[in-house]
Amino acid sequence: MTHKLVRNVSLSLISLALTVIPMSLLAQVASEFRVVNDGSSTIIGLEIKENGSNRWQTLTLTNGNLTPGTEATFVWSERSANSDCVWSIRAIYADGTSEPSAFDFCTETSLTFEN
Image 1 (tube, rainbow, N blue to C red):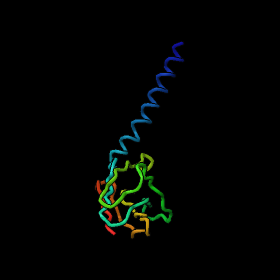
Image 2 (tube, one colour):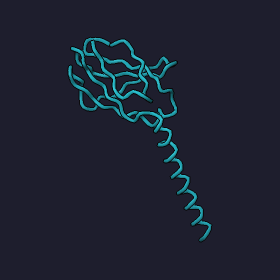
Image 3 (tube, one colour):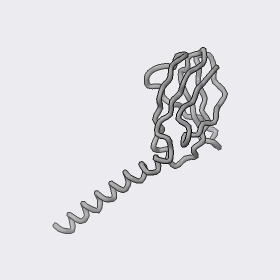
Image 4 (cartoon, helix red, strand yellow):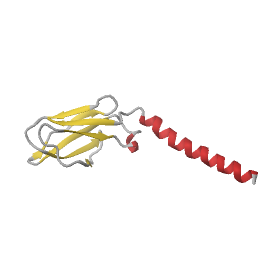
């Protein structure tokens, strides 16, 4: 009985440690960032890639497209807490793609696209 209790407490402490460690790493990265569409075309998507990578990843626009003059807030993924802070980000417009911009997720909290 005592062995089972100690094992359960140990597993609970390990589970707690595993949830605390990623959160402390995440504290190094801004957890949210704002994207502003200050252009004249609608943004229908965003793509990001870590510096040194050739693979673009799509960020989901959960509330629909970003029409001119609107903004949206994105939450930075915990999975990226161990990555470099600077990523490339580009807007996908209804009529084309913007040039990539370097964005430091550790220090910047807002990015404005103008087309």
